[in-house]
Image (cartoon, rainbow, N blue to C red):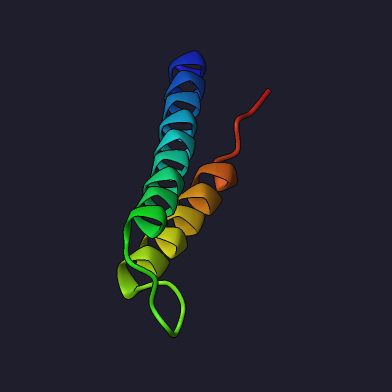
Length: 66
């Protein structure tokens, strides 16, 4: 049972970190594709960047018992 829980935690953590990396790549790609704006990146780009950081933090907060 403990092994199953550890495996589940590892899969969740890996999934969240992968999702965070993909979100970050998407925001960078969108920033490169979007026309430049006078006041910095658009709201969508900032939203994706923020969400990526939140997801990464959630993934890193999952403690995996040794």
